[in-house]
Length: 168
Image 1 (cartoon, rainbow, N blue to C red):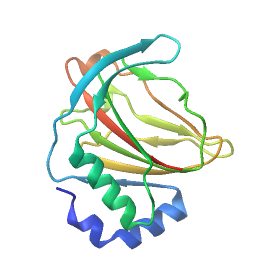
Image 2: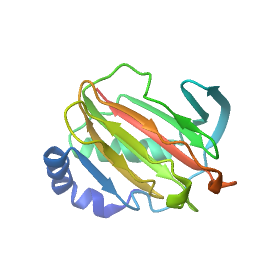
Image 3: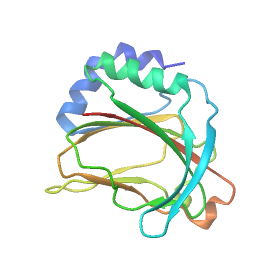
């Protein structure tokens, strides 16, 4: 299920991550997986999304790859976003470490928006485009915040599911 080429080139990927602070791997998983949704959470001043149970195969693939590049994952959670959903600046305590962001969005289109933005204190924002079966790895700085841009009405019935995995 985990794309073998990323395991084969893990040292080059780790080097690029350390140099640039951001890597986007397309087709990280070779198959789509099913997510079991839970409750929808809404606070107009903070967020709107549906919580989801992270499938074992996604969590295991992320942890296996993270271990291969010398990073230990300590926390994993998933969210489903559709029309009107968003997050504002994250409410979690800022931390230094790495964030792995696995995206599953088979019919996604740039007009839907929803990209994930990371805002470092002293440099340009890192904008992660929604990439079906893609894994973004972001090197987080102490005061870096993130948010998911509001999904537009163009998304109609399309959803994107994002699994976040963190190392601290």
